[in-house]
Length: 394
Ligand code: FDA
Image (tube, rainbow, N blue to C red; front, side, top):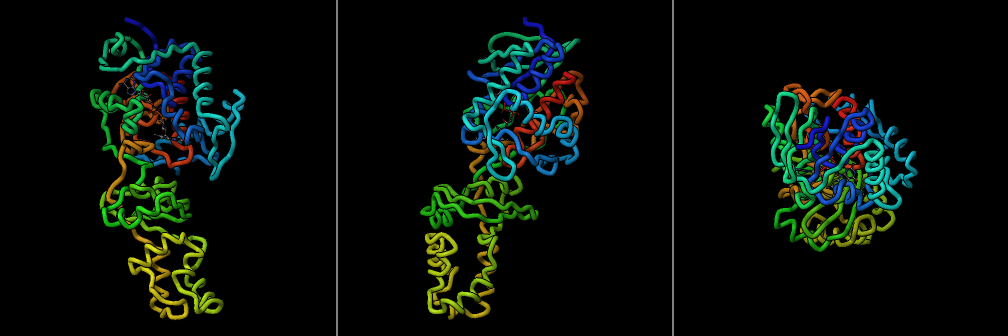
């Protein structure tokens, strides 16, 4: 049996950050992961370029049962601290949009930085080691894996959520929490594309690949101004992924298809300048032609010239385009979701140390906890911040 000070379950973003910090404090640390490689989600993130943080990250960008929970860790290890770390390692990166920072070359660069930090801190990373069981002992924890047993004083659970089972997602983190009497809040796929009801799917299938800048709102009033993307399964794109975290089954989402334009004012202008032009062709100059054709076929757009529109038709059309309602059938689920909503209730954890209040020496960090960031580098920033925090105490 191997005896160490700290076992970290999960060689992902949160686990590697935590392990390096604990190692620098002189703790002997072993990271256990069932995968062949460390940081597998980092490697596929951001289209292979890892959106590793967001310059504007703040507690408002996170969903959590307790909105105050993330304040402490985000302020003690900020996006600027992580940027300072990657600068020190000479990472080449760029700002894309809305404060999002991406690697110039490859997400592997971020994994390499974390592995270098772990190496400098003397951390041992044991791959192909699936954790099967955890038991409490008098002086710590016994962790059994396929490869053997490990004894530790502090156990850090950084085993992630349920997204992308193909990349090794397992419910082990939630199971350990429940085993030690911690409440686990219901989980749900988030930052995930919507699927459509058959009727809408058939209507919009031909639009696959078309993207429209929009403002998308959920029934609770949350709004995101980014692109939507039609796919062969339904709707995706950054605005849809963002709103999916706030959407609940059976609800509609409202999409302002022309957020930069007042359609009523535009129609008034057209009545002056192109009165004889068909409404359909006029609208096709400000929205994708194929999309307008579909709305026209379904009679959402009157079949007339611009000057033939009545006042009530103008009001109806403007309202329709600025508040286009779509009721998703569901989401693509954990298979393609970027994150898992819900998880270990943060009321069970210290926001300073991430230690479980009910079990000394047991820590939960990263996606396994009930903290979900918006799209845009916020989830990795939480992983760095909570990994750093727990690493100071475990
Ligand atoms: P993570 O899931 O990374 O790590 C958990 C580890 O635990 C895994 O390595 C797994 O193998 C291991 N494990 C699980 N069960 C085990 C067991 N029983 N025994 C041993 N090991 C076990 N975020 C962001 O900020 N910017 C971005 O660009 C993206 N892009 C992105 C793209 C895609 C496709 C996805 C799926 C996700 C993103 N994300 C993202 C989200 C981001 O990847 C996510 O928030 C973090 O990876 C969470 O880090 P954790 O360390 O908590 O879990």
